[in-house]
Image 1: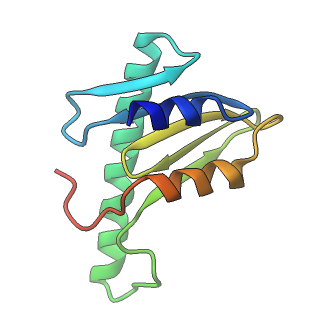
Image 2: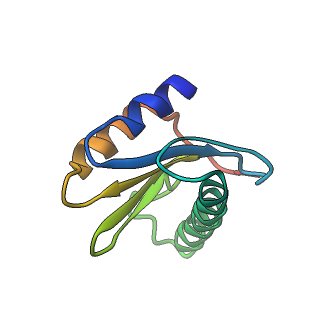
Length: 119
């Protein structure tokens, strides 16, 4: 996984890429973040991933499964920066210089599918 994080972190516009455990006790990263910022990023990505899975599971239980379950990831695009997450791998990218479609394709091709429970 380290070589994948390194290749992801070296894509144009990528600030950093990392991996976190669903239990929240481990993380690793490559790129231009301090260890403390990477730790906080992994916590934020883990919490958002768990919330995304919960919401998708709720929609599915209400009979509203539109092909979004199980959730594989999420993405937030801000004014200058975006966060892309697939499975338990995150990527921070600068919007001006990154190709977000290419980043997401790379993530989806390399990160195994999530099925059901995360914890």
